[in-house]
Image (cartoon, rainbow over all chains, first blue to last red; front, top):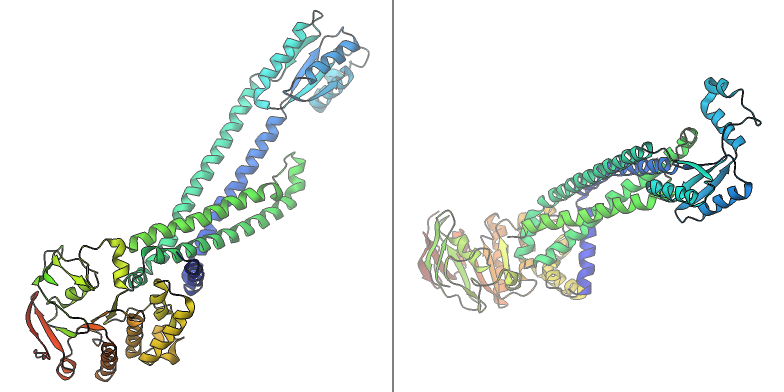
Length: 305
Length: 225
């Protein structure tokens, strides 16, 4: 193909969008709407994923120390735990602090229970709160910390807790939520694909006579096909670009106006800055590719003249 | 064309052993009742249909055996004109004619020059930017003829080019075809127009029931309408 012919195809394809005004408008709208639904679910899934990750990251290991060990020993233990590559953060919680936290967690109703305890007779041990790099491997890390304690003849670590059982259950739930989200998004992407290629097929069906005439004049199949590819790609691109712009603008507004409410519930929404590129890439990519694909299969059908 | 048979999938025998030789730069009328096989005869020439049996050569190519990939290239050497014009409705007159040249990847400047030349020949230079729907039937047929001749094909196949036109307009089209013939093209024209055949005397091939029943130089239409 000559370069000038390629230019001609690009020009013809774009002109075709204009010439078939209403048909183009109909396809662009249908592409925009089906991708909009996909986009909404994509953002929803991203947020659910983000939320489950936040929950997962709140999982911690609590290392309770023996009551009768020296300050140096406490610090040494802290250092060895902190040196584990799987540990992302370690914080010392003194017995006084522990009592305070316990009081707070029990709330107003339970406060009476702890009334008789103060600094002099605090029954709680000193402890470390450990956060891990990969929450899913928390059991492994807990075992390693326990091993550190066991290696020392003084048995400085009394117990290691991370909510055994509960944590495993939490991960099962979050993984299930993520998988369901993924299935919904994939299903919608598939539906959008069918819808878009069908719309484009209709616009081309309306022009099957034109294809027949082109063939009679001696146009090769690829000569006829190319402008349709360009047209399909353009329809897909315009439709998905419109959707992306509207969707991200609306979402940005939503995030900003709901930030405070969700913030109070300790939920952080995914911002447009974080998700915009992914959403735009997925929507515009699907839109454009399906545009080309849709026109490719439908033109092929009418080329057999 | 040698011993050509065409049997459609539904079993109807459109052509039954037709042999004919049309020389370079001849002007031939194909006449006969409706459904006698005229259209099939024409379609075989520009390879819209393939013969069931027999051999067809156009410009020295055996087009019955042509690979589908090659078809566009032989069509570029055959200009086709139809009763229903078959113009691209969304393109202007200029673009319709230019399309036939874009197909052969001609340079744009040459296209511009040649298209205007041809439009001048058919007398439609002033309507270059009109859409087909804005033209009369006669004018649309002129555009179709302009498109058919723009690449200087050796053969023009015209299937009832005057079928949808009033007598006066028809004569305009005939003058145009004569002019093109005069410039060296072979013209094969299927027609029902008795007046034209009997006035503008040319070779006449009559087809009935799928066989050639008459083939005479300077013949007459020979049917009563």
